[in-house]
Image (cartoon, rainbow, N blue to C red; front, side):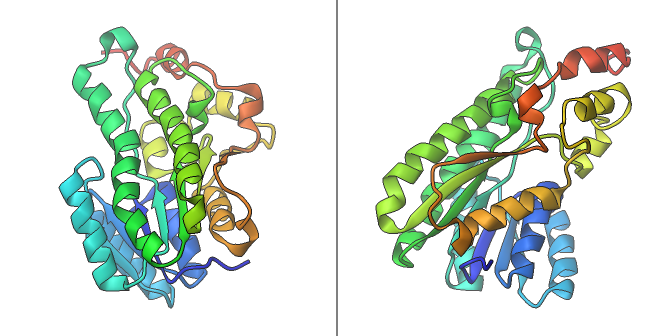
Length: 268
């Protein structure tokens, strides 16, 4: 299996799933721009990965919710790499809040990053893919696009939008040789999920109980499927959202809110 491109952009590429995807692409010989709002973290990751792989890793600051920042990032990516054949829309953000308690600013921030971000990045990158006679886009959705849980109305709505956006863009750009797909991770071990306690205690046990393959996912599990979709092996696949969750979608999601509340996570 070979990823077919000399250059890729991965948003939110400094850590977690984005970093895992960047590592997989670099191992395949594809140079990667790590587009991240945390510039220092992206630069540190880029230096580390460039030392490990023959392909180049480059850090570029980007706020995916800001059109000017996205345009500047894409311009910088083409300056560094020349040809861009891959875009992975991975950047995301959300904090738990029940709908009647959710601040409008938190709703808008989550929609901006998780849904408007993929739109702005896709819009900016597509002309380059057209000029290069095709390419691949993978959007990182979430199991939450089909499996709802308390406290994530904003995130679930955004990720459902990402999957539908994936289908529409795939239909629009297939004639230009561009394939567009999405992956929907389930519970995955990242710095964020480890820091916020989502993999520990009762809530971690709930995740395991609802995952037929019996473990928490790792970033490389997601990255392998992304690489497949961007490779010649996936050349006849477009408009799909693939759950990469160890089968977790079969049993659905429990209420994060209820389990965390029982654990005392919201006690003052």
